[in-house]
Length: 106
Image 1: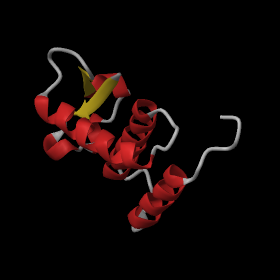
Image 2 (image 1 turned 180 degrees about the horizontal axis):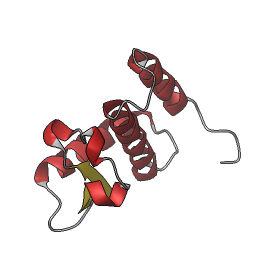
Image 3 (image 1 turned 30 degrees about the horizontal axis):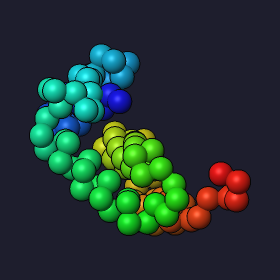
């Protein structure tokens, strides 16, 4: 899995630097020898929390989905691509979806 990190000052790309995603990012792979220790540690902490509520669902996949959703919300919010003042509502909705039990047969 690759994780994109903005190179702009303070993690935000200036408006005149907005180009394609590939122009603004560097790649960090999960599970690779060069994965930064803080990133691996953060993912491990999140995975431990997910394991508590995963029930019969795959913990690693569930953790990846939550990580990706949080990352997406963060990056879109930082770049003013989401409505302001609705951060708590988005997180509460994400948590509600996340904690919902999967449909039978899945």
